[in-house]
Image 1 (cartoon, rainbow, N blue to C red):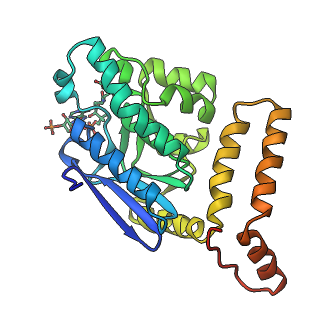
Image 2: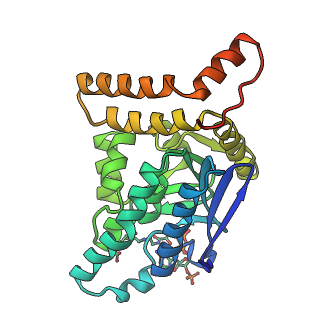
Image 3: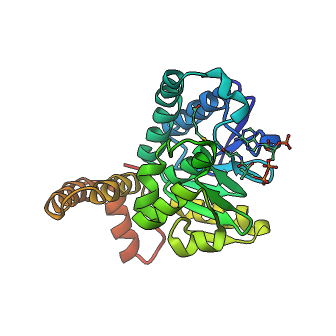
Length: 261
Ligand code: T3D
């Protein structure tokens, strides 16, 4: 599939998706959502890709649904179908991708654009980045996973405040609230994000995929169930060549080389 409103590149085992409609702060159109889904699938299928980075071109990360394209789905039913057909599979695929994902938040993340950032595993933000649950400002409610991820990240009260007021949360507050993992000056955003991505890309891929599933499971299950799940995953991890390699490397005082088997 040829892309018009995103860019997709792979280098050093890291796939980067760049939203590329800078004039609208990368507002999401039907075409862009299709391309984005296709690119995430590519990153999923490509065995050489170990980490996925999502970012935006220009001064915005993503301003959410393109409000000028709202007329494409003018009835409540059409909006519901649009969410179910375009947003839900994309958010679910991102969140369950068995590879680490990083949102490199270069600027404002609003509405469903903020949801996209939240659906990634980690968020590295530029000082200029800001976050707003803009939905309420256009008389809508959080969608695309914001109601799920936001309270888990920042807690119930802060999630409600953001969702109900549409307030803008600046990067430093986002860091203090646990909304982002790191805040760095804009000129170091790419360097710091790729350093983190490279460290993850050098890790044991099967274990990383299981860690992602394990933490998600633990966040929504009882302790006894989480303990059982940990045991199952640990047995699977212990059976991998990567585990044997890591122990051998430790004993030989050399870096481990993980092959994902
Ligand atoms: O139908 C469905 O599927 C329903 C799903 C809904 C999901 C949603 O995401 S609803 C929420 C949609 N998003 C918004 O409501 C955010 C709208 N944008 C803003 O509030 C502000 O633009 C920002 C807070 C994001 C940034 O403000 P600022 O002052 O930095 O920039 P700006 O001047 O407002 O925007 C710059 C340009 O981007 C401007 O275009 P212009 O005047 O230079 O030609 C603006 O119109 C455009 N733009 C920004 N956001 C959108 C947009 N164009 C279309 N859609 C946008 N969402």
